[in-house]
Image (tube, rainbow, N blue to C red; front, side, top):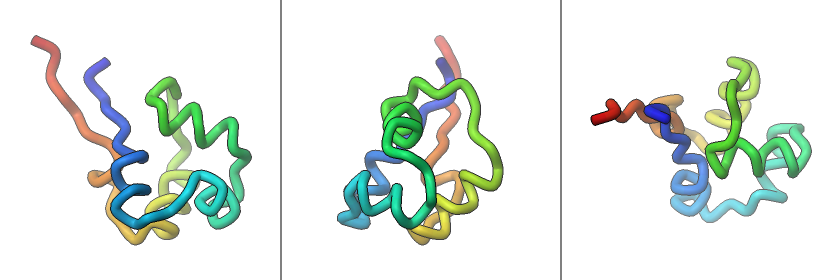
Length: 69
């Protein structure tokens, strides 16, 4: 898949656990875990906004496009 989710990278940079992010964003752990592992098929802009606010980052820090070769 050409869209890569770097949520785990940003969480590590901010030294934030999945539990802490879950509390700040208001999502359950299983949904965040699916997103973190890159298995999510979609993400709502409101969810992306909440994650960016909690991690103090930009959407481009979390989502990356890699062209298939």
